[in-house]
Amino acid sequence: MEILSDIPVNLEPAQVLERIQVRKDKHHIGDIIRELLTITHPLTHPKAVYEVGYIDHKNHETVTINGVCFTSRLLRVNLDKVERVFPYVVTCGRELNEVTTPPGDFMRSYCLDAIKETALRAAFKHLREHLTAKYHLGRLSTMTPGSLNSWPIDQQPALFRLIGDVTNLIGVRLTSAYLMVPVKSVSGMFFPTEINFESCQLCPREGCPSRRAAYDADLTLKYR
Image 1 (cartoon, rainbow, N blue to C red):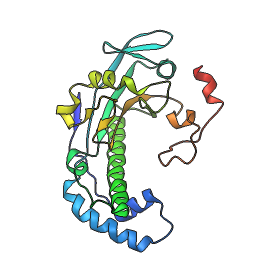
Image 2 (cartoon, rainbow, N blue to C red):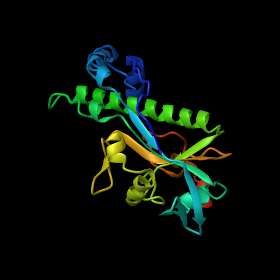
Image 3 (cartoon, rainbow, N blue to C red):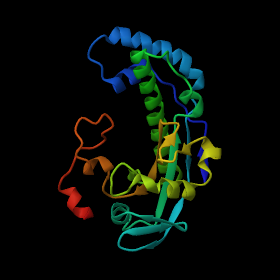
Image 4 (cartoon, rainbow, N blue to C red):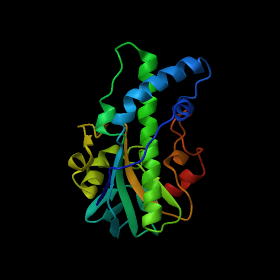
């Protein structure tokens, strides 16, 4: 298990504006973002933790990694030719999560949310680059429990158990509904692959701001 706690993140207003994708009042919103960045900059300490996992056993719909069993046909198919995986949790950090805006100020709240999301994405990118460099990996794909029904969110506790005491390690805890706190956190499993895979390819939802790949109806047949 390894913790990344010194992740370099220096957010610029343009990065946050790109995340928001505003079309009107850019100057006004830019001023709000700059004001919020002044407040959040000293409190932006994203963190990540990951483990190196080795596959012990596979059958039709389960995969056992370091003694922890996961039930998912999707996961099983994607790890068919894989022996080593990298389960992870990344968070924007408790410090940034505790920053709030005045009640009823929806625009500032929206901009602050975008700042937290941008910090999380920067930390996620840092983790991917760290793994690629340290373990001399080629192409990496990732899966996240709960992003699709075929790897349900109720397997979050198993993922956390595989990594270790995530709450004490980087301050991320699970609720009774298996959601993460801080909210701007992401968990999942990196795995080496010759063909890039994103859960978005199997999700038909339109207009998703977090979409990373186009929906591929033909690809869904592979996981039946």
